Length: 241
Image 1 (cartoon, one colour):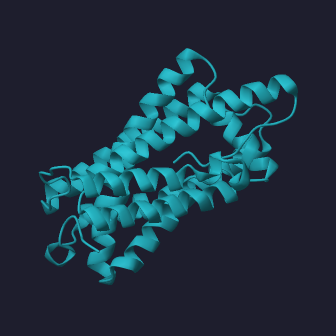
Image 2: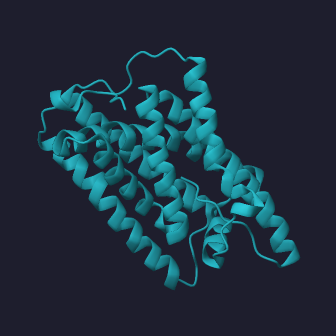
């Protein structure tokens, strides 16, 4: 498995430690707290507000990632030329990530279905905002988790697989507002994304795969949930990462 940047050349300084505390520790804790608030509130956030919150978090990820880059100067997005092999890896990962869209693999957890339905867009305006969030997530989350966080953790623990597991668990917990089962799917997708990066040696492939996954999943779940709500029979569940 390849590294995007050599962790052995990284010098950990205050920006790096602040980044790790924010991304690997604080964001998962904040996500758990948000889930608890959503579980007791009588007025859950609107979809538009959830999208804005997501965009705000992703902007924060880019800011802190940029701060680490300016300090450590390690290459997160070096020049890259797409190959047919790497494209095939990306397509395969996208297909695996979308398996829960198929009936045999759908989650049976009512909470996961409810949370997925709450997030998925319904109207044209919501879809536009959701797609913006999906595109920004593809860039910001991959740079932060598969790029900066993974490299910094690898510099600490010295193991590719352990670093990937730590970052994938953190990534999964951040999505716990969709339910613990959906969060476990997000964590598995995160680990798969690390493998894609390890095989291709770049973040570009997984960034596109991530954005397409969220766009496809959100669109399909939104349509299915709208139909299910009309028929009063519930929706489908799939982690939108």
